[in-house]
Each structure stands twice: as C-alpha cells, then as structure tokens.
Image (cartoon, rainbow, N blue to C red):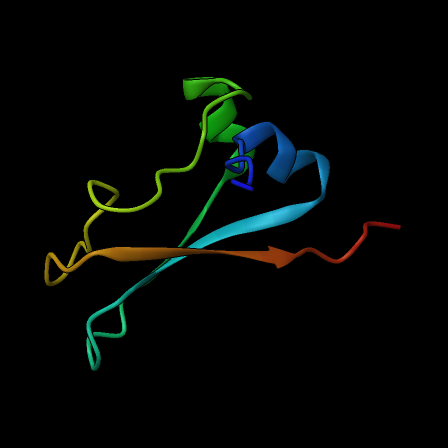
Length: 75
C-alpha cells in the first residue's frame, strides 16, 4: 500500500518543522524552511517532492533529503 505524500498543510497542522540536508557525505549543507511562508506561496495542498527530481544542494548540487522535526508547543 502506497503512503500519501506529505503536504505543506499537514506539516503545519501537525506543528512540524521542515528541514533538508544534503545526501553527499561530508558536505554538511542543511536548511530549515518557513512552512507558513511556503503555504502562502505554493498553497497548503502542495506536496513535498519525493524521489528523483527533488531539490538539489545549494553547495554541491547533490540530491537533498527532507526531514520533519517536532516543534515545541507554544505556551
């Protein structure tokens, strides 16, 4: 059974932070994305890219892996 792709809206609704890291060993490039800003530009239904053809590292051009990090709940 195929899993449903993550959308920007589902990431926001689950209070998660979207991060990316270069797959190339030794590169070390990482980035954190402002999900609300991305939703304003691309819409809440925008799906994260998966597989080939996703984003490339800003430093070396290698493929990028996405990760989701739980954010601390605000008081």
